[in-house]
Amino acid sequence: MEKNLRGYWKKHSHPYFEFIYFFNAKAQIDVPEGKLELVPYDLVVYPPGVMHHELPDMRYPQEVICIAAYIDSLDTMNTSFQISDTKGTFGWLFEQSFEEFKEKQEGYEEIIINYIKAILFHIHRSFKNNKTATIDILNSSVRFIHEHFYESVSVEQLASISCVSKSYLSRLFLKRLGMSPMRYLNSVRVDIAKKLLIDSKLSIGDIAVKVGFSDPLYFSRVFNKLTGVAPTEFRKLK
Image 1 (cartoon, rainbow, N blue to C red):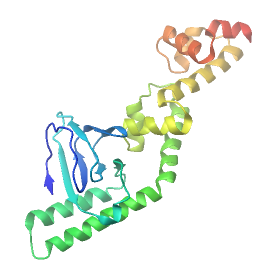
Image 2 (image 1 turned 30 degrees about the vertical axis):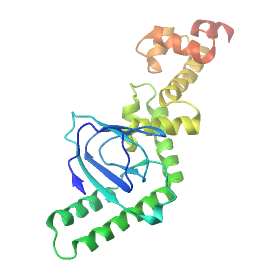
Image 3 (image 1 turned 90 degrees about the vertical axis):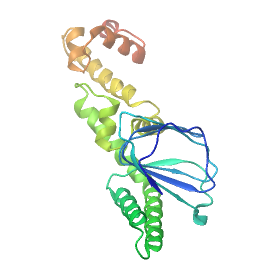
Image 4 (image 1 turned 180 degrees about the vertical axis):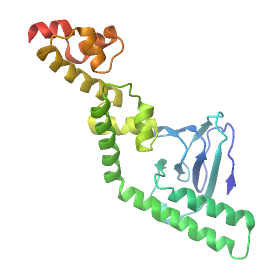
């Protein structure tokens, strides 16, 4: 067990499970499944033998706690994954484990084992509830887009609202909706722009601003890309 990880690490693996909790840290991690973007209050889990390469964002203090453990009950798990600690439960368990390890009072090893068991139970619960959780995350992001499409909306902002990383949210949108968060935002804006082009006499520039584009030329390019025609042509066709 260790605290305050780390600088640059080469690609490596371990014969045991490794759990790293990010308190005040950011890092990009390469694993066989792709790239993980870890932000504060994320937990990453490496099963035994899984190669990984950590590249911390050194603008952050890199305050993390790392736990290594041999766990037979998870021997079927063979891919890395991350969990967003939305309730702070994992953070508390990791902090308590580290305090026991640091102080080494009587019975500390048994206490740490029980904290690790609790971590495993919460990981299992997280996976069990993952379907509901991902739906909630997606719904909150989609609802925010529909309520704030006329504002400057970023993937960072959407991810922050749901307390997940940008990469996780982007993967969720792609998996569930078949497009990125920004493409979904633009599709909402274009759908509203279509109605305004048909039902109003507003100029193309005014419509662009009304649906969230500060640049009318960029609005026209996005509109053309999503519909196959320019806004002026669309208005004539309708």
